[in-house]
Length: 134
Image 1 (tube, helix red, strand yellow):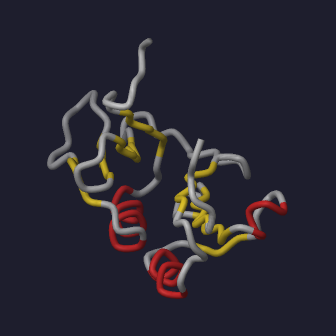
Image 2 (image 1 turned 90 degrees about the vertical axis):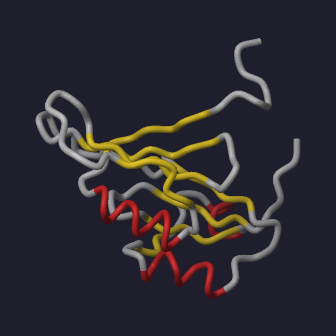
């Protein structure tokens, strides 16, 4: 097996504005900054790495100022957070106040079991009321 429960997982995708991404995911969602670029290094991307404290999963918005890539999110590019209960008003308002936009889900499941918020790059965060279990 290549991946097990202890394997660190990182999801990277392009961003237009790392400061806006940081506001959304840190102030809005409550993730912690794990690492960020502090200076421009020619030939390297500017990076922001955020994740839950102590978790082995990180989310990494990236920007390449020399060769920018425009984010092209689809309605199926979802970052789903399973809350195990309906999202409280404050849990919805925080990402909105931090630059998000509430959007309808692409399919009925998303609106029936959660709230969908687009981040500043247009990628979708779903605050799902269901618990995760396999």
